[in-house]
Image 1 (cartoon, rainbow, N blue to C red):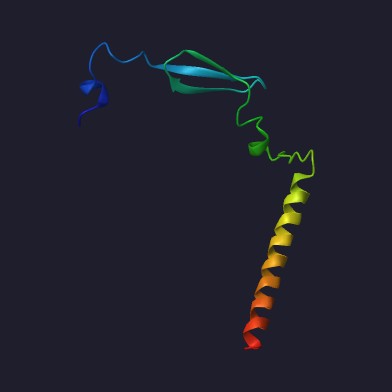
Image 2 (image 1 turned 120 degrees about the vertical axis):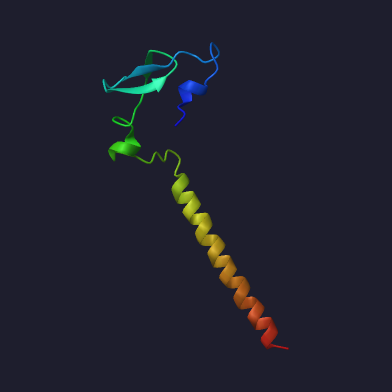
Length: 91
C-alpha cells in the first residue's frame, strides 16, 4: 500500500499541524491545518442553529408580508381558473 507521504513532492507542501481552535465562547477542539492556532468567534457549541436557540428576526414584518402575498397569489389563481371555466361553459 502506498501512503500519501511516500508520493508527496518534497519542499512544496506547507507544514501540517494539529491546530487548536479556540472559540470566543471558550470551547476548544483540534483540527488539521497549516497553522498552529485558530481563533474563531462562533462554533457549533455556541451557534444558535446547533444549540436549538435559533430565533427568527422579523424586524419589519417581512414574514407577514410574504404570507399575505402568497395568499393573494393562490387566491388569484383560483379566480383565474373559475373565470376560465365560466367562459368555456358559455360557448
